Image 1 (cartoon, rainbow, N blue to C red):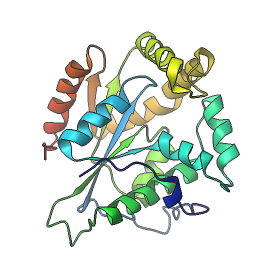
Image 2 (spheres, one colour):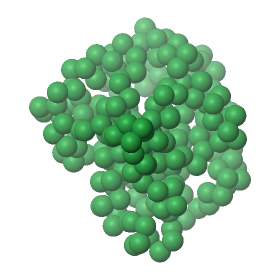
Image 3 (cartoon, helix red, strand yellow):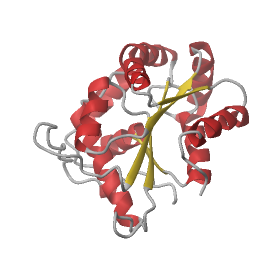
Amino acid sequence: MANVKADPGSVPAEPSPPQTSQNTTPRFSSSAVSVVFLLGGPGSGKGTQSTNLVRDYGFIHLSAGDLLRAEQARPGSQYGDLIKSYIREGTIVPMEITVALLSNAMADALEKQSLSASESAGKKARFLIDGFPRKLDQAVFFEDTVCLSEFTLFLNCPEDVMETRLLKRGETSGRDDDNAESIRKRFRVFVDTSMPVVHAFEKQGKVVSVEATGSVEEVYAHVKEGIEARGIHPV
């Protein structure tokens, strides 16, 4: 499988949120689709490790942040200014918008790859969802309405290391949130809202935790060891 990037043109004019979990079943069956969440603080290396995992394990990579930025920039989006404001302040976009964008991107990717429960010959489509869920209610809403996750890959990295990486990236990224003030806000938001997601999945035995310091190669070796122990093998 190839890495499927978000295509702003493929997003419906106004993404319709999934139904509430009170009156629906998940859109995708976990018997046909494998979802791995990738979490870590800002600058923990999620993008770099995602590239490696796509290359070696056939994941379809979806970045919640990339999808939101694409929707923010899409002409005519009623959510564009709202998303921009949330991203600039380092706070979390309403989950209905994020989950709708992810769900639609998964459907688009499956259509492009001609993958379905009947066509995949027993092989699951693998999705690596990067930077999501950022809150516990997002995790519950996604699993109730889109698909159950197999596990969460958590990149554990000290804040001083992440800040150094982000400030360096900010020299060339052009991103509004790659500055010291926004970075520190994002750290606080991650600790306060995203770490409870990690802890909740840990209680379910659904977390692979990796120390994200050292070289890219060293971190990736630990990532491979962790996910292969969960039955994810190279393609």
